[in-house]
Length: 262
Image 1 (cartoon, rainbow, N blue to C red):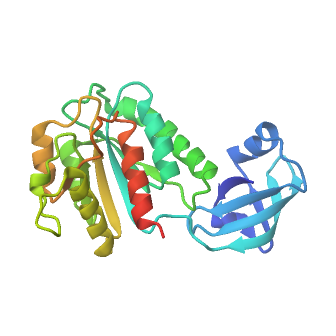
Image 2: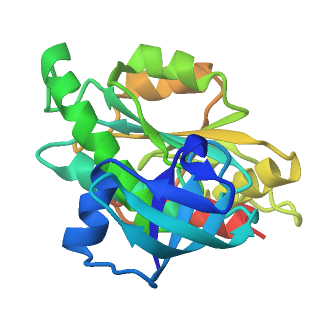
Image 3: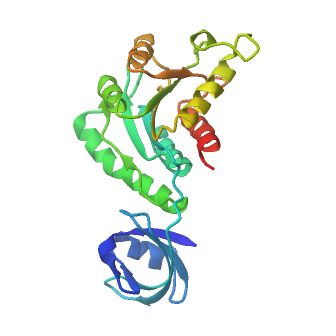
């Protein structure tokens, strides 16, 4: 069933009128016809309407509401992804997959080892496309909201922004278990065991928001890791393998889904 986002003002009694660019997508791309079922989601409340297409006009697609569902598909923790600016179109891939995996917000971040240098003018031009990708991915994955892609930030601004989260995670290939503790039998925890303990502790504490920092292709500069630690970040590992900048967000989001989603 295809899904589209609507505004609350589009709902009138038992009917919803889809307007804007989605009309062309529904009628000319997907070739939907009267009688077919679609899923329409209020972008502000997440309320989901199961509807049948009743009429197709030049002004919009008029749908009749068959059912209303309030069950949320969102993660119980709000995740903001602070992604180091990568080369070429990798950021578009990251946005798409992060939205599919449940991220609530994506923030591109200019880091010391970022090869890409975006001017404000270039960033403004890309921002509309980035948010369009997020909206498309949200529809495809049946999200109850469209995650926002924010304007690129400097690393320092991103750290300050992340301080509003209940917790900050920074996956780092040089993460050391010495920053952690001991196992129940008094032995030394491995890096992975320490990471598991950190994530499980976050769930036990009932955190409601998490900021995740992912480095660019060249990884984090040591000074950036130190700055994150100063801000209270947990330095974690994603395993013994070195992951690409576009793979690391998928890995940590999958872990958080497994731990937090019940």
